[in-house]
Length: 79
Image (cartoon, rainbow, N blue to C red; front, side, top):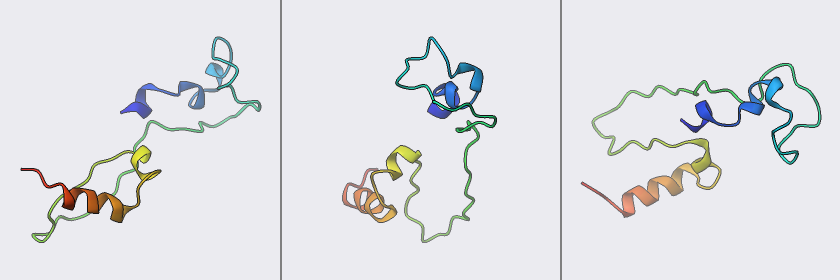
Protein backbone atom coordinates (compact mmCIF):
# COMPACT_ATOMS: atom_id res chain seq x y z
CA UNK A 1 0.00 0.00 0.00
CA UNK A 2 2.77 2.48 0.85
CA UNK A 3 4.22 2.08 -2.62
CA UNK A 4 1.03 3.42 -4.12
CA UNK A 5 1.04 6.62 -2.06
CA UNK A 6 4.65 7.42 -1.29
CA UNK A 7 7.96 8.15 -2.97
CA UNK A 8 6.37 9.84 -5.98
CA UNK A 9 9.74 11.45 -6.79
CA UNK A 10 11.02 7.94 -7.64
CA UNK A 11 8.05 7.27 -9.93
CA UNK A 12 7.87 10.51 -11.90
CA UNK A 13 10.88 12.65 -12.74
CA UNK A 14 8.90 15.90 -12.57
CA UNK A 15 8.59 15.43 -8.78
CA UNK A 16 12.35 15.08 -8.29
CA UNK A 17 12.76 18.83 -7.66
CA UNK A 18 11.81 21.52 -5.17
CA UNK A 19 9.94 21.52 -2.86
CA UNK A 20 11.34 18.02 -2.29
CA UNK A 21 14.07 18.25 0.34
CA UNK A 22 17.53 18.13 -1.34
CA UNK A 23 18.46 15.10 0.75
CA UNK A 24 15.89 13.04 -1.17
CA UNK A 25 16.47 14.43 -4.66
CA UNK A 26 18.32 12.30 -7.18
CA UNK A 27 21.35 13.98 -8.68
CA UNK A 28 20.86 12.50 -12.16
CA UNK A 29 17.63 12.71 -14.18
CA UNK A 30 15.83 9.48 -15.02
CA UNK A 31 13.55 8.53 -17.91
CA UNK A 32 11.86 5.44 -16.46
CA UNK A 33 10.41 5.08 -12.95
CA UNK A 34 12.83 3.79 -10.34
CA UNK A 35 9.99 2.59 -8.14
CA UNK A 36 6.68 1.15 -9.25
CA UNK A 37 3.35 0.96 -7.47
CA UNK A 38 2.68 -2.29 -9.31
CA UNK A 39 3.02 -5.19 -6.89
CA UNK A 40 5.12 -8.28 -7.44
CA UNK A 41 2.77 -11.23 -7.36
CA UNK A 42 3.72 -14.82 -6.60
CA UNK A 43 1.12 -17.53 -7.08
CA UNK A 44 1.36 -20.61 -4.88
CA UNK A 45 -1.32 -23.27 -4.70
CA UNK A 46 -2.29 -23.85 -1.08
CA UNK A 47 -1.98 -27.42 0.08
CA UNK A 48 -3.75 -29.12 3.02
CA UNK A 49 -0.38 -29.34 4.78
CA UNK A 50 0.12 -25.54 4.69
CA UNK A 51 -0.30 -24.10 8.17
CA UNK A 52 -0.19 -20.34 7.58
CA UNK A 53 0.43 -17.62 5.07
CA UNK A 54 2.64 -14.58 5.64
CA UNK A 55 1.73 -11.35 3.85
CA UNK A 56 4.55 -8.83 4.07
CA UNK A 57 6.20 -5.99 2.23
CA UNK A 58 9.81 -5.73 1.20
CA UNK A 59 10.42 -3.82 4.44
CA UNK A 60 10.08 -7.07 6.39
CA UNK A 61 12.27 -9.09 4.04
CA UNK A 62 15.07 -6.52 4.34
CA UNK A 63 15.38 -7.60 7.99
CA UNK A 64 14.23 -11.23 8.14
CA UNK A 65 14.87 -14.34 6.11
CA UNK A 66 11.97 -16.57 5.11
CA UNK A 67 12.96 -19.02 7.84
CA UNK A 68 13.15 -16.32 10.52
CA UNK A 69 9.62 -15.17 9.61
CA UNK A 70 8.36 -18.76 9.75
CA UNK A 71 10.04 -19.28 13.13
CA UNK A 72 8.33 -16.19 14.56
CA UNK A 73 4.89 -17.33 13.38
CA UNK A 74 5.43 -20.88 14.68
CA UNK A 75 6.76 -19.68 18.05
CA UNK A 76 3.90 -17.22 18.64
CA UNK A 77 0.72 -18.97 17.41
CA UNK A 78 -2.61 -17.12 17.38
CA UNK A 79 -6.16 -18.31 16.87
